[in-house]
Length: 512
Image (cartoon, rainbow, N blue to C red; front, side, top):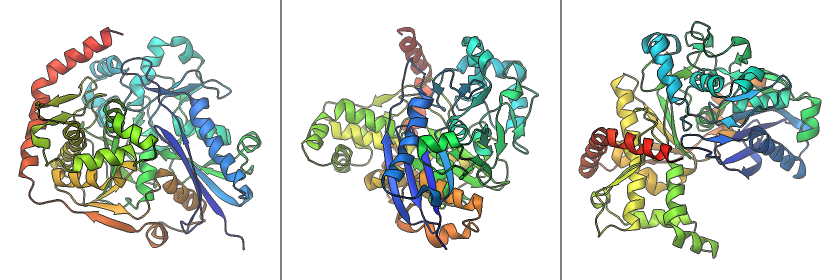
């Protein structure tokens, strides 16, 4: 009997990755496509749905065809993507504007305030299990209705990134329940279904897609999609999910108490639970398996901040890399490793694009505090890496406060390849971090979900038997007194400077 292939594709903030596997997790082919985010105004972050999301998926599929694989052997396809995003499409499924990205896009703050005042924060929290923040889709739909009414009027459906890709592949308007959880205040978290009690000023509910679990089949590859992608018509396609949820699956963070920390453009936290854990500081959502739940959070500028530092202040390392030398990030990390913990009194507040959990402040701004004439670029870069550790510690401590402390932490994403960074985070947060042998990413988790949804993979136990192995465990250094003091400054500096940071944010926006 011919062994089927499984195809997972993940559209991330800066790249799209596809992986073709066997049912036992053997990787047969990988392909990556780079892309960009657009920042048309302060607080706005967008991507083109056809020119980025769909074009990347087509490129990944075509690369598999060009590599000589028989796409008729692909038993199932699963797609994940950044999210939650907002994309209005017309009756033909054509995008009506660029996709509005997830929590790093903060354009709908007035709508958040209006909805809170109009309906009451507690009432919406009781329904949706989480407070309205820049991560919520409901306020962004209201922003669309208020600011681009002609587009809202023409919108047949309001999709997210993965939902649009599923439509392009299958012709079905579907999103998964994990993603749908972020459409608050339009979703009832008790059973993760659409709920109209707060919908009237926001949206007509018929504009929302169908909700399914990630392990359910959304549809099958259409003839039109087959012609574009080279995939075989009729191939099953799952309901997909957000990239972070697929990444959690890819490294085995699927049991109650498992916390995945995804080091990417941002940091994203996914803590698996067995019940709703409503708290205004986090996002309580459905997970990928039927009746599963998780508690999610995120930092806004992690990999994005190291990229900013590299591009703005790492010109020597970039030039050396271009001349055939070491990777610029690796060179910067090596430089930072020689600086003592605490960066000799230099602290970075990493709020260069606001901050998500647990403070939910889109108007926070970045700060380097404690600079002296003796500090160097190495000190500054180490303080950037340390700022992630302070953010992780703040989130983990807050989870423990509400009785949802993690039992096991798994580190994934591009940043998890930087052991200097992981050690810094473990030392600051005083938590061990499990590093998997394979950190292919969300696309690998997508491939597993594709197999599980179709029965090609019989049950989740195969994830630990065949797909996931531990590479190393990063243990914290018990001598962390300097970090305790620096963490205290990190917390208090933000609280004391918050009003002035908000003023600077307003002045920055007014200048555009």
